[in-house]
Amino acid sequence: MEGFAKEVCRRLPLGEAVLRLLDFISQEEFLDGVFERYHGRSFEHVIRFPLFVQLITDALLQHGGSGHRSFQQAVENEVLEATVRAVYGKLARVPVSLSVGLFAEATRRLEQVFPPLRTRFRGRCDVLSPPRSTARRSNTWRNG
Image 1: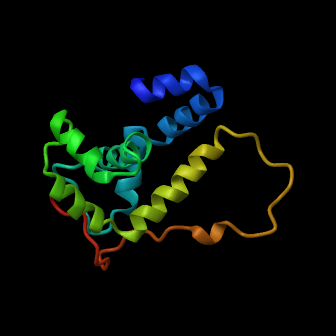
Image 2: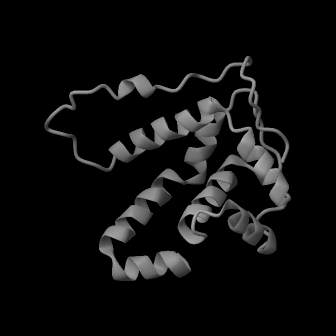
């Protein structure tokens, strides 16, 4: 843990719990599996899906929501081998199936660490099941 995350953990046990849960749903193997199942006609090359998710996470947690600052810092730190423009292009082409798939699978993954609910919700959450990727998808995850 570095900088911001370390300070949050030191001061706020709830903050530490949230960051640990985020880490749990951001593990590279998990994200690789999500990409494999929901990428549609998209593909990875320079910017792999786990790195892409990390860049977005960093934008939200470290850069006040600024993707540009997150992407630029990753280039400066030699974490990102593509250009900032390439990341924006990738962001514009994220298939809906991949976004919904990540949300659905991350939710299921988080359910593993919580005790089962004693009461059922009145609404139905299963309507958010992501579509399996198909060759007909128009959005692509092109070479970054």
